[in-house]
Image (cartoon, rainbow, N blue to C red):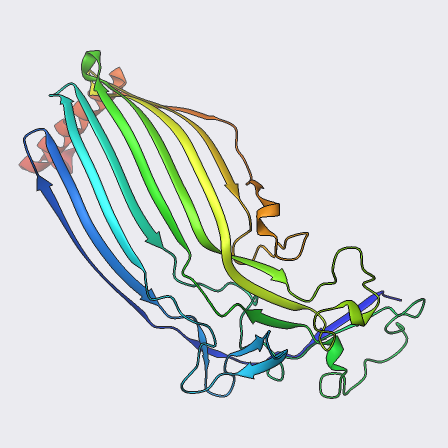
Length: 336
């Protein structure tokens, strides 16, 4: 006898999206020691929307009702059209042929890309009906010996419906990326580089259940829910943030006299407030995403080495191969 029973229909949805983008970029050699890389990009990706019979259906928090898309309002959210992405790169020879300073910045956008259902608006009643039956006291929602009611997806209690919603101000997720590095020429024509790499994510997609009881109230009383006529209201927002900082060291000895060496070290920290599409992570306290701020899956400092060596035997093998090719070119291949 289960404590909860869940069932849903499976509609077919045709979803569309339009994407436009353009950019301009140029390198400007200010002097023999200073070079600038300047660019500007604009991009706009519409929210996904249902086409044909199964269109977007969003939840209106003001009226507490589901609203269906029309030809004049097919998204049911306010799309973000302010996606300007500047680019800036600097390379400066502090000491000519000995030390170089580099820095870069860019603002990048992530057009919507849906994985699974999440807050996919066409997947709402009556196009998709998701019914959840919960245990009432000691009585289970269904007995294992009972058949599933044949009309459970057509004649149901609305309070058992789980729906999807999105906040109307839907911003495009973005990340500010920046780095600063200094490279120094070392003995034996090798080089050493130290870098700082960072990024800041803003307006990241973060989801929560908008139909929760206040902390400390009885969840068994329907009157304690903001929208007692519905079950869960899985709501998408673009309020998440993330932070990444890293120290990177690199030593490189170019291939010379049959030997190449590359060594690197990375120490990084990554902090965020919400998972991405498909992670199904929700705050423990309603929509308090900042309460969830903490380390992402961390990895220890990374140390790596790679080398390439020219073995003594490789030269003799190469010479023998050349001798065979030389004899073949002169018509001696048949006798070899």
